[in-house]
Image (cartoon, rainbow, N blue to C red; front, side, top):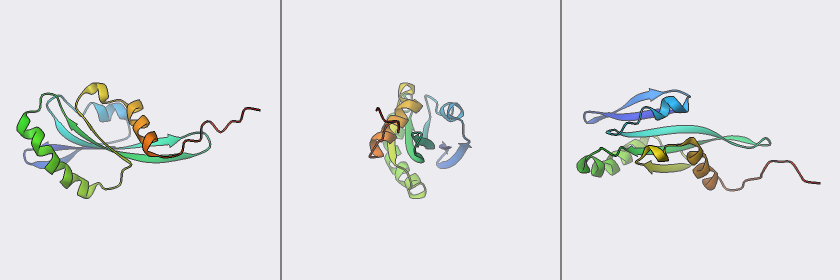
Amino acid sequence: MAVFKFDGNRIIVSGTGTDFEDFKVQFGEDDRAFGYLRIQMGDEMSKRKKFLFLTWVGPSVGVIKRAKMSTDKAMVKEVIANFAVELQIETMAEFDVTYFKEQLMRAGGANYGTGVRDL
């Protein structure tokens, strides 16, 4: 995972790591940020890693800064171009690894189930 936040007018890497809870706490109510998250998908027959690009606009962010996010996102996406799903979330209720996995599963095509046949 990687988190990119604003430092004045610059966008900087504010965190990296592997733990989802460490990732989640970096997104505050008055933050504008971008996240890049790798989630392992699949079942017991097939494992694969999928990438998610996240735009976070906290509920306390002002109108002008909200509007500027589309331009800033375009710049970040020039660097981070490899992802299966792109999401924009604005509340902590949406900030859920299960929700992210569901979105990746929808984008991933075929889902083969458990790999165990009923006889």
